Length: 195
Image (cartoon, rainbow, N blue to C red; front, side, top):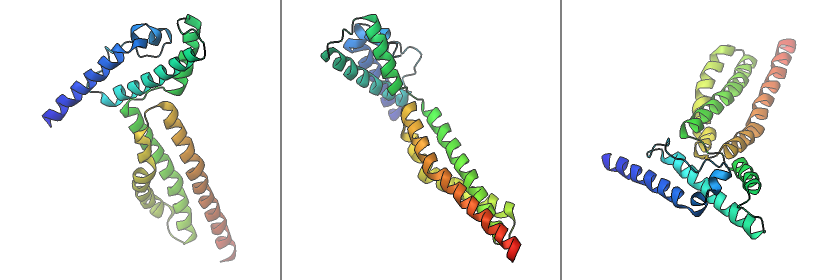
């Protein structure tokens, strides 16, 4: 366990050294573009997830700066670099691991509530207590959603990719839960009226 921690600290130092030694960091382009890749004094060496995310952002920045130079843009110009920096920041805003985990928990709980209500409505249709099955189904659904649907969120490294994953999950799973609830309400009304 102790050896792993030392390796992680060395890895963090190596990533910082790599980022500081890049040509675009040394010639000030990261700073001019306001990319957040020019000062790592406040970042701990053992925050590997965040440092790797910054490394990915630096790779993207280097690639986009090189492409801009190949297109004939003067990346030494302050306005060109600020515009390029805004474009890079729009594509890759890094996240801390804690932000990703909290978002995954929030998404799992939100989806659990939708499906818990849907299951509670269907329990009413079957003549049982709404709260009875609703409560137990929420517990089961939290486990299932956390395991299968929220877990991919944990591997996202930028705000943009995390947002895209959440929107994708919302588009697929929220309407399905609402549809199950609506069908359950219709079935409950028909049961009350005719049976």
